[in-house]
Length: 520
Image 1 (cartoon, rainbow, N blue to C red):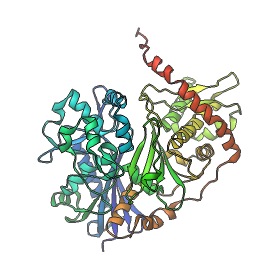
Image 2 (cartoon, one colour; image 1 turned 180 degrees about the horizontal axis):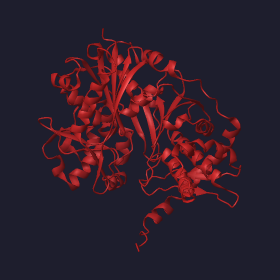
Image 3 (cartoon, one colour; image 1 turned 90 degrees about the horizontal axis):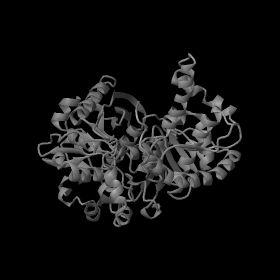
Image 4 (tube, rainbow, N blue to C red; image 1 turned 120 degrees about the vertical axis):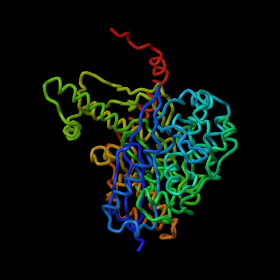
C-alpha cells in the first residue's frame, strides 16, 4: 500500500527528507548538515554533486527508519532554498558550482538596475524587488564580468530544480521562482519584457520549462532509484520555493481567515495572503516578493528582513563577553533563559532600536546595503535590560514595517522559526502588529508544505483547502490574543521608528564612505 509522502527540504543549513502519512502525520525524518563555501569578495557557492549525494543519502537513511519505505511511497516532493544560479551542460553535468542566495557579488548590478527608468515596469510585472540573490542579477554579473562562468551551460536551475532533475531527468522550474526572477506573476509565465530589461535575451535559452507540481509529476528515474533506494517510476513532484512551502505548512493559506505568516529565524520573513492578483499591494520602494502559490489565482506577498535573531545573538554576545572578562563563560542557552528576567527589569522609558545588524544592510521593506543598526534615546537611566527589550521591540517593529508595506495589518499571525518558542517575543510581536499570535506543533513546515503539494497533485485531496484542513489546522495551537495596553505603546513608537530610520539613511551612506581605522 502506497501510504507515505516524502518531502525533501534542502535548506541553507540542513538538508532533510521527511516521511508523512497521507493525512499529514509525520512518521520519520533524516537530515544532513548542508555545506557551502565563500569565494572571493562576496561569493557564496555550493557543490552540485555533493548536494545531490546528500539528498540521496537522507532518503536512504529514511528507509532505515520506516519499514518497507520504498514500496509504500506514493510520491516524493522537493523544495529547497530559493534564488541562486545552478548551471548544467547538455549532458546534465554541473558547470561550476551553484551560486547561493547569500552571494553578494551582484550588489552593484542591482544598484545600477534599480536606478534605470525601466525598473518600475519590471517591478510591476514580477512584483518582486531586485536583489543580488536572484538568478537574473547573478547572470547579469556573469555576463558583464565573467562570461566564461556560463560557457557550455544549457540550463539554469535553482537548488530544488537541480534535485528534481537528478530525481527525474526533467529540466524544469516552478512558477514561484520563475516569475519573481524572470516573469509576470499574473500570467505565471516568463516575460520577454523582464528578460529584455535585464539584457539577458542571449541567455534566454538557459531558462527551463515551468512545471506546476500541483498539477503534474514525473517518474523517478532508474538511476535515481539506485542512488536513493526508492522504486523507479515513483511519482516525483517539483515543489514551490521553500518560503512558499514553509508558509503553506505553517498555515498562511486558510481561506476565510485574515492571516499573515512570519518566520523569525536568522532572517525575518513576513508574508500575507493575496487571494487574487488584484489583492497584491506593490510598495513605492519596489521591494519584497510576490510568489505564486500552488493554488489557482492565489499569491503570497513577502517582505524580508536581512537579520532577525542575529540581533538577539548580538546583544547576548555583549553580555557573554562582559561575563567572560569577569571570569564566567556563560552558555548561550543560559543567556537565552535570562531574557524574560531582563524584560521584567526593563524600565518604562522607551528606546528605539533598528535591527539592521547584518553587514549586508537591509532588504525589506527597503533596500540599502549601508543600513546599520542603531539605538536611539539612551540616557543614564537605561541599563542592559532596557537594551534587550529594545532589541526585541525593534524586531517586532521591523515586522510591522514590512507588513505595512504590503497593505493592512493581518488580524492573526502564524508565527514560526526558532524564536517563535519565546513567549516574550510572541507577546511583543502580537502587540506591535495588533494581531493574535498562533504557533504550530509541526516543526517541519517546509517539508510538509511540499508534501501537501504532492497530496493535491496526486488527487489524494481535491484541493489545497481540503488538504489544509487535515495537514495544518489540527496542528495549530490556540491563538494568543494581543495585549491592548502594550499595543498602544507600539502604536506610538512605530511612527518614531519609521521616521528615524528614514532620517538616518544619509548618515549610513556617509558612514560607509569613512575609511577603516589604520592598523597598528
